[in-house]
Image (cartoon, rainbow, N blue to C red; front, side, top):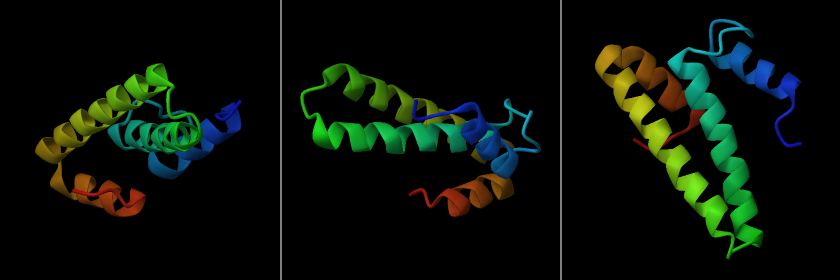
Amino acid sequence: MYLAKEKKEEIFAKHGKGKNDTGSAEGQIALFTHRIAHLSEHLKTNRKDYNTERSLVRLVGKRRSLLDYLMKKDIMRYRAIVKELGLRK
């Protein structure tokens, strides 16, 4: 299992308000980023796995919509999470 409970708690503790704060936009964006990185590595070795490719595209879209929401809601939080995760703008 690539995403154990401990890893999830670590992601939410680092980027959210606490390890149990799973609903914050920053925590969700960080979790999506972790999952996107994992799926990208999988697709490098399994080029014809089209179901995973579709899942990756959907995750990227979800992350983008959360980033757009955060940009409208609070630009400083948006800039902080983009810088922290090293995302392109």
